[in-house]
Image 1 (cartoon, rainbow, N blue to C red):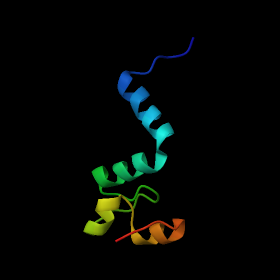
Image 2 (image 1 turned 45 degrees about the vertical axis):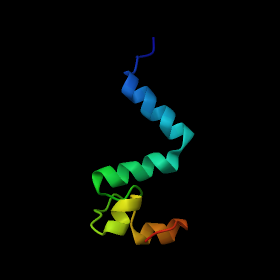
Image 3 (image 1 turned 45 degrees about the horizontal axis):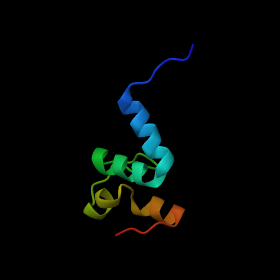
Length: 64
């Protein structure tokens, strides 16, 4: 038998499957940590996108 997940977990996994970049960015914004390296975000530009300038450069993402 498999274990059942509550609806919140099912929705999060579904959202992540549909758009992992958006879910990661939302996590970073909501928790004020970079969604890639988990370092704290203090700059408004970083908290707006959910990741910092170092990771933006590393992954070729827009920042600032």
